[in-house]
Image (cartoon, rainbow, N blue to C red):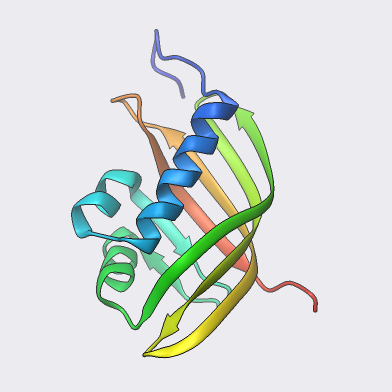
Amino acid sequence: MMAEGQDLITIDEVQRAVSTFNEAMVNPSTELMDSLCADELTYGHSSGLIQNKAAFIDDIVHGPFNFLTLEAADQTITISGNTAIVRHIFLAKGTNAGEPADVRIGNTQVYQKARDGALKLLARQAYKLPN
């Protein structure tokens, strides 16, 4: 539900939010990730693991996977009121427990405009793609 006087979300605003989030995953900090994620965050991995905000932030900051590069290919954005649905192919290079790792998965993200006007990641679900 939109608060009275709250601006609608624009495509450019969503594109910036996705780009900022992806950059933050390459260089994460607890404070930065906290500012980009809604308190109600549900973060789904392609493995089936589901994390809340605290577990996701702890994992991205302190976990065994380190992103070196991240790209959102073939991105589409659908806006409904103060919510945006983003779909893209999540392409990343990184290390998992020190071993090189390449990631290519489908990704759906839901961003919602917070009371302060910032877009926050509310939900994310990754899924395996056919080879």
